[in-house]
Image 1 (tube, rainbow, N blue to C red):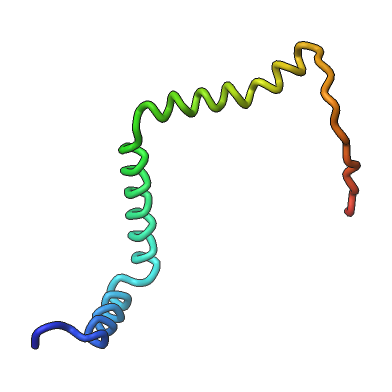
Image 2 (tube, helix red, strand yellow; image 1 turned 60 degrees about the horizontal axis):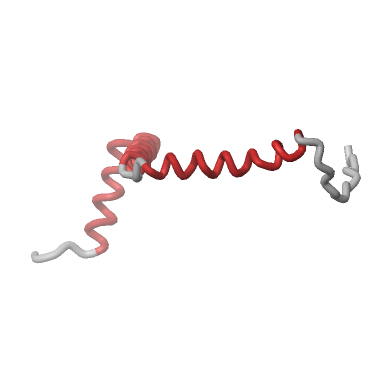
Length: 83
């Protein structure tokens, strides 16, 4: 009578599924996952937002070069339309 075997846990799982229904259990899982995700985002370092802003500024740099009338050599590929 010490620990429960795998069969005991399977019977408990089936009873819980019958009582609550699989949809309710799925919703609880989704809510729990959202709470964990929100907790992780809340625990992030506040300085990380500054790093994200720096990355966004670096990605905007090519647009600034185009605006300054510099020539950029590229090869264009024709997009085939397969409708």
